[in-house]
Image 1 (spheres, helix red, strand yellow):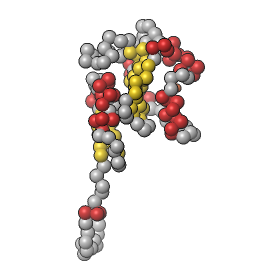
Image 2: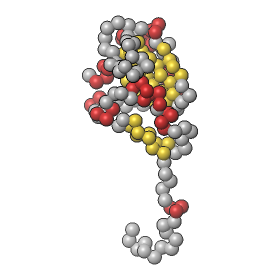
Image 3: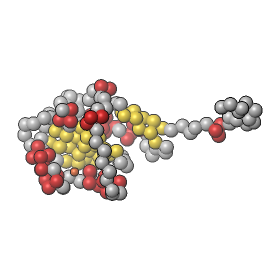
Image 4: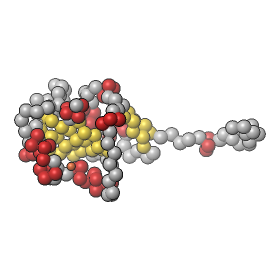
Length: 159
Ligand SMILES: [Fe+2]
């Protein structure tokens, strides 16, 4: 900055930007001002189930991006995401593609996973032998990371 040469006591350590915790999962960067847990702990289950995906090849496609203005409390949106009871009533197509009786939710300390098992045929996730779900007809994973991050993984999203 011009004419700043004579400034006394600058820069001081207090003038530095504060460091922020940063984690990476594939192409996604996660920043936190005050993380409650290490990033690796937060994404551990998601990494175990979907870390085999070619995340480094993922690219943002603006033509498929959608924005919605939802006039609701963010926690209400999370609640809607986390309950599967509305599937047969609101998402008829999805409800027929998934076996509702085998739809399950797994809880972890800082995240949860909803597993959609295919009702028969259709697109399935290609899960490696190292996957805890290997051999199951998994059609979708719905990860939720505390407090408000949702990551959906299903094979039909690429088309
Ligand atoms: Fe929904």
